[in-house]
Structures are given as structure tokens and as C-alpha cells.
Amino acid sequence: MEHVHQKKCIQLKNFNDKRSVTNMCNYALLFVWLCCLSCSGGSSSSEPTGSLKVEVNWSDIDYYQCTQMGITTVVLEIFHYETSLFSSTYLLQPCQTTTITLDKVKIGSNLTLVINAKDSEKKIIYQGRAYGIRIDELIVNDGGTVHILPYDIPTMNFVSIPPGTVMMGSPETEIGRAEDEKQHLASLSKGFELQTTEVTQAQWESVMGFNTSAYYVCQNCPVENVSWYEVQEFIKQLNKNDTKHVYRLPTEAEWEYAARAGTQTAFANGEIVDENCNDPVLNEIGWFCGNALLESKPVAQKKPNAFGLYDMHGNVLEWCQDSYGEYPDGFEADPVGSTTGGEYKVVRGGHRLSPASHCRSAKRFNYKPDTKNLFLGFRLVRT
Image (cartoon, rainbow, N blue to C red; front, side, top):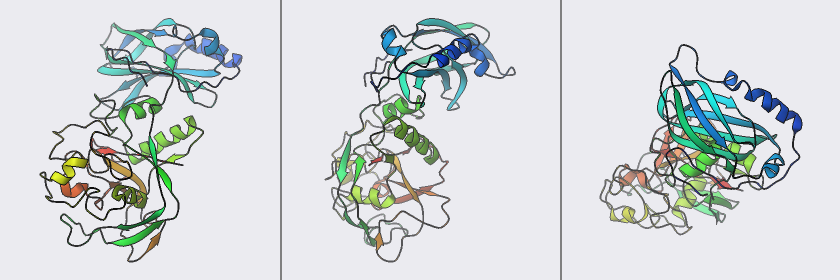
């Protein structure tokens, strides 16, 4: 993915070269919709609003090629970081550069404008964005130019994890051990592919159309501030966009098996030395309270484990698929988490402000699936 960093413009490259027959009936409908842009969205009359003038530029795309892509809808949305919501939605005309004025746009600063052109299966074909937009009340605000380009999902790298067994939990002598880390043997009968890094903000943004992160100035940092439910929506959209693979969250057993990478020590590279912020072993492999300086860090900057996985210890916490519950007393085959309750989901890995004890391979957290905060992220399994 190529980013052109300007105040109000970012460009994305090709995602899908598939050609399809133009749906002329849908085009006719879009021309009608263009005449009443603001009727499909916008703010209520009781809220302070302004207008936004913006050029939607398709000039970098061959018109004939564009019309052969089977675009059925072109949706412009304005995202407010303060509320993490799209406040205004408009339907636009495909494949032609045009200047439009959007009325009744909710006021705010540092807004993001997103345009997605989708086919009949709701797959994004083209996309454009404008950042740093400000809407002041009762005036026509200049939104600049939004360049529409073929859409691309930034590369997600995966490594193959072989089937095997793992001693989950921790010995009673391990520094920082918690009561819910009872040791037990678990087997994984099938191998799987695990993403080498946490899902980045650029990867999230390319699929969802906006950046939900609280710390959003770093496109190659992990996405955070995402709930378990929102991750499921991301996965649903990703599976729709990529028909060659199936994506999901890892189970807790898969996560710990991959994090340990054949080790039984607290970290993949050795034993824990200090349970707070001065652990030299963790410093080599993870971002935590001893080295992160309060900021999210770009992925894959520390040493990987033996499986080639980065940031399994620290940076951001990672959602798992499972419901949280007590470990069993004995052996488990292909565990999928608690079968009772299910009010909380498993979270693993520690984050950039965690003490070393919270970044251990065995450390377990649990959150309600609607929880969002600036430390919660995830990585994916691919099959």
C-alpha cells in the first residue's frame, strides 16, 4: 500500500482486478441519488451543522475500466474521532470527477472523509480518503480533493504453525504467576497459519474505511481501541474481500502454543527476571513499561520468537476467540475455551504499559466483548 501523506488526502492502490459487466440500471439510480445527496444521511436539525465542498477526483482511473468494474454504490461518509462514529452519509456518482457541496454536516475538527465504491457483492473496488477536515457552523468549508484509487488490503504476513502439544499455564515458582494459570497439557491436532504481527492500523483502515485507534498517528502500529464484536465485523468484511482464505481469531490454546514456540519459560526467549519494568529478557522481545515510553510502537521492531512471530509479549493486548473460564484438571484436545457462562472473552499478551509479569506467555486476561480501550488489539489466524 502506498500512502501519500497530505493534510487532506491519502491514496490507495489496487486490490481487485476482476472485471464484471456494468449494471446500467444501478448507474441510473446513482444519478438520481446524486441529485439529493444529503437525503440519505447527515445530522438532525437540532445539531449545529455546516456545509462541505469537496472535489471527488477519479482522473487517475481510466473511465472505461472503471465502468467495467461493476460498481453499484459509491458511499461518502464523514468519520468523527471524538465519537468513533460516521455522522454523515451520502451517495455519489461513480467514475466521474465532480465537485459537490454536502449540506447539514455535523461540525467538528480533525475529521476523516471516506469514499468507498462497491460492487453488487458489497466488496470495495475503489477507495479514497481525506484527513484533517474541519467543519465550522453555518459556512461552506473547503474539503479539498479526494483522490479515488483502486483499493488494496495492505499485506498481512502469516507463518505456518505445525500441530503439536503445549503445557499451558505456569509452574507455581514462576515470578508473577496468577491463580488461573493451572498447568495442563493441551494438544492441537491441526496446524494453522498465524499472522506474524498484530493487525496494523493501515490494515484495519483499508478494510473498515476508518481508523478506530486512540493513538492514530502511526499507520504501522497495532490497531487498538477495538472491541471483540468489532473484530468480528472486521473478520466478516475481510472474509468477504478475500475469497481465497478464511480468517478468524486464534483460540487461547493456539495463542499460547504459538507464543511459547516450543519453550516452557515465562517468555519465548527466557525466564522472567523482574516482574515490574526492569526485565532485560523481555526488553529483547517485547514492548512494555520498561521501554515503550507510553507510545504504541510499530510492529516487528523487536526480535521474533522461534516461529517468526513478533510482539507476542507486549505492545497491545490481543483478543482470542474463546470465552474465559477455569482451566481443566487434565488433558485437553483442541480446546475452544469455556462452555459455560461466556460473559467474558480471553485476552492475551500484555501491552506497552504492562509490567513484565503481565507479558508472560501464561498470563491470562478477560474482558467483556464490548470493551474498547487504547491497549486492546488482535492478530488473525488464516486457513
